[in-house]
Amino acid sequence: MCGIIGCMKKNKSNVAPTLLYGAKKLEYRGYDSVGIATYSDKIHVKKDEGKIEEVHKRLNLYDMPGSYGIAHVRWASVGRATKENAHPHTDENEKVAIVHNGTIKNYATLKKELKSEGHTFTSQTDTEVIVHLIEKFMDDGLDLEHALRESTKLLKGSYAIVAISSDEPYKMVATRKDSSLVLGVEQDSYYVASDILAMLKYTRNIIELEEGEIVVITDEDYVIHDKFDNPINKEITVTPWTPEMIDKNGYPYYMIKEINEQPEVIQKTLNDKNKIRAVLDDIGDFERICLIACGTSYHAALSGKYIIETVAKIPTNVILASEFSHTLNVLDEKTLVISVSQSGETADTLKALKMIDEKIKTLSIVNVETSQMPKVTDYSIITQAGPEIGVAATKTYLAQVCVMYLMAGILGNDSELIERLYEVPRYIEEILERCDELKVYSKRYSFVNDLFYMGKGFSYPTVLEAALKMKEISYIHAEAYASGELKHGPLALIDFTMPVISVIPPGEDHDLAVNALEEVKARKTLILTIGSENDDIIEDKANDCFLINPEVDEEIAPLVYIVALQLVAYYITVEKRLNPDMPRNLAKTVATE
Ligand code: M6R
Image (cartoon, rainbow, N blue to C red; front, top):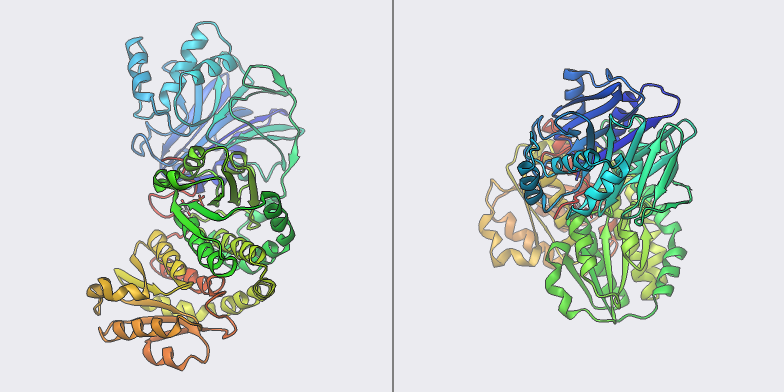
């Protein structure tokens, strides 16, 4: 749940600005602390608690000598967010420095052994055992890469590690297991990082490192060794992502940029229709679907269940990845298991996939092609959202939902549904053009402590997702319920202190959803309704209404209405002077169970 980068400048230019730039692009993975180690005559380290900009102001992270080095941004898991726990970690003599992403499960046992052998620890992290192990093996006579290899044999858990040593200048070694690591190759420099965003400004030529491989990078070349220590040749691929895709393009935050990209994302997803059809053809027959996911991706999967069961009539179960083990017993070879994930690195989802019997077919719907999930599933569909930097998922959610609508249309032979999807970008544009109306409403709701969301049928996953968005970026307590459930308990919560946001598109569920609206109106609370133009009934019952094109009925509303709700969460957050891109305690890639 951290971001790591290493860079070797073959032309011997100063590496610190490149490392800092790369670390900044990885900050969405964690921003509790930051650190850099470079080599010039000796290893130089600067690190501290806080976001990159804060630490840079205090320590001037550009002012680091050397043409190669490593950097880290941390999301604290083992050990609090302090200077001591920030990476890079070094041994007592600053002979070895490493950055690590992942979790070492047996670190306590290793730490005890290393301490008894005389090693002194200065942090509470799991990572520090790795640096002492490498030091120990180097003291026994191994070179840096073999010391790293021997060390990893003792580690249980997940890791992506980059290490340097003052005993072997102008060498950098890296390896991974259950955490991603990508090598970037340019004429004048080499890069190794948790993901390509860290190096995209400098190179699009990448090599994905597989488990157990070790790359040895020097100021002349790089060599990759397989898990048996044999040197291997791996093909360089060119990522379709471009540096322009990770610019803010004049927007104040990534989140609002990414919300605005959604019409294009839907269009690109629809362009993939034939690829998705080909994947489904390859998979062949199945009788049931089991969707596994976490967070926002779980809500996208729930939307998938509604449309797949309605249109394709295939029984579909949706399970939180962290709760998946209990479902194992009911899976059989007629089930297609589909994992849904933006990052493709979510530990809970990867763990669930690993539990599944090899005979059961697995498909991943993932946004990051170089991530682990496509490698551990039989089939994969890559969502066309492009890089998403804001911690709150927006455009990737919509891309996931759109993929599942396409799947439903294909599996259910419903060409009419597929045709209707081509209108979705236009409906979203219409909402984006009227965002000022939502800004005004958002001001009115920004002071509240609690919010209650309700929606029925297809709109139920939408309100779950809207409430999650609100919680994670504005820190307002938000609950979402299916409208029909109100009377079974949560109605007791509703009074004037609990404003309600209700989602009521036209369709079969409209009237019952309105009944629930009546119930909250009678409790004299403030109500904002997202509904359809010309719907006089809801206009009459809500204090505030945001009305959407009436062509959008309940079936396709999940692809459209959510945009208005994302904007409400965003504007409330900005109104509260919070940074929507970096919510407290969260990171975009959750590589810990
Ligand atoms: O990368 P994934 O889609 O697997 O991540 C799952 C959740 O951690 C993620 O959706 C999280 O809930 C987001 N912060 C939501 O905005």
